[in-house]
Length: 72
Image (tube, rainbow, N blue to C red; front, side, top):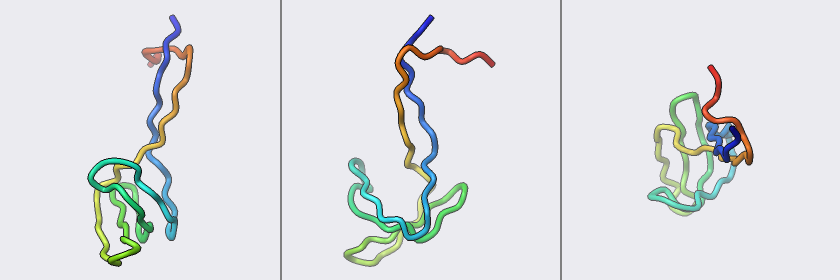
């Protein structure tokens, strides 16, 4: 049976990357200053303050007519 399925994958950040978070409590412009599998450190381009958080950004894609649930 075919369904519309939304796919979420952790986003692969790169050092020095300029990003804009469109919504939520971290909304705004940031620069990626450190990243590993569990954490990301971002710098505000205005105050130059740095914040480290658990990774939270995901790339989403919607697949029409996809199989769901996935077979194991």
